Length: 199
Image (cartoon, rainbow, N blue to C red; front, side, top):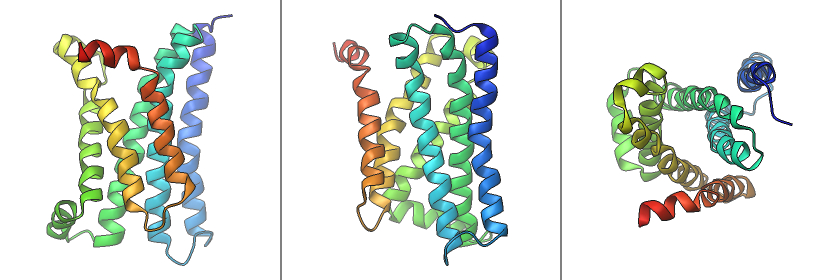
């Protein structure tokens, strides 16, 4: 049984709520002292993981639509991608403000250059920015065939973002490994596309 437009509408509402409610929880935790002794780190890690989860969810839409024979699911992909960008922006902002201080933009530039895992994170954010800016139909019409080429950058982000996470943790734990393997699996499901590019 295929999803109807009305069901997809309600699914979008559920996805918006699922992406937004963690932000409300984060504010609540901050106000009520539910974070650890280093709340700045907690906020950075939480926002980063949310961005990564939404990136994986975005990548999951196409396989679900194809193998589940639910073409209307594709309509949920943009909203997940935009939420991924929003959380990635919160992640970068929390690092810049809470770790370095608002006025220290020169230090932020230094950090992004001198620490390779931060360079990967910043590059991932810039690519997400390009996808977010061109995610609307007007941009699709303007860019034509180039639109798809730009949005294929999500596969680059799917490699860079998990490496950024793995590289940033001081003690290797299962969580970043699981995110990395999940990204590899979602990329592997597109092996036919990559094989065509290689040819």
